Image (tube, rainbow, N blue to C red):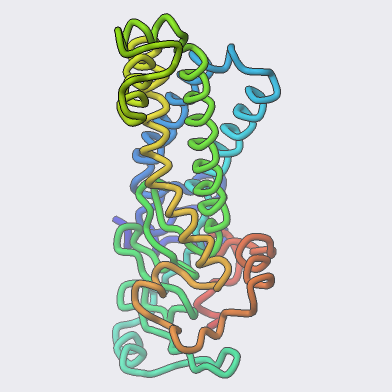
Length: 307
């Protein structure tokens, strides 16, 4: 069971905690929803393969190379986010019932930049969670700087894999934008005078339409669908994905700049005074660039002994 796995987790991290599956001494872990991650990968790869088959041969090689590089970065970031320890806090299931009950009724807190931050007791893991940590019922563990549980990543997003998740959101948005734009350019390029004349009939006179501009645009779209339907479908698919992922990337950019998490935003924590906000530049450095140190899954010093 998940509890048994957590209880048997040694200092060398040979067994994964909670609902994770681990290998290489837990240096690679995947969450309970890894199948969804593979589905996301198949969607991304399928769209790009269609692009390379239908559009890329007509592009200048720098554009095709840029698209391939962006695809490679997107896949790398996806796998890093999905297979990196999100910041699991080891459970302390050896704690006896009496001590656990006493801790559950004790109040602890730490002061961070003049703000009193409470340390909450986790009844499942039997530890005081570090500041900003939360328990994920899907993964069955407490996670440092818990942001949210993301099925597309297959696991939680927390302190150790947030930068990869954020990078994936940005890169997949750019990939959709580039794929859709180049696909639309290809449609406009192949819709020639003859095709427009066939679609518009007597209304067409050397690209001057008697119809309204909206009707003319609809006619050009119909001509594109008739000429290159797969490319039109690819452009529409990319536009739909961009409408979903683009706002998400913008939202997480705002969280990075203010050093907040989705969990804190939803719960309305630190709205008046955020003790973790150190200014936009330092916040970005901390979230995206600072060294994370060793994972607690294979560290010889469990985190619950440090708090």
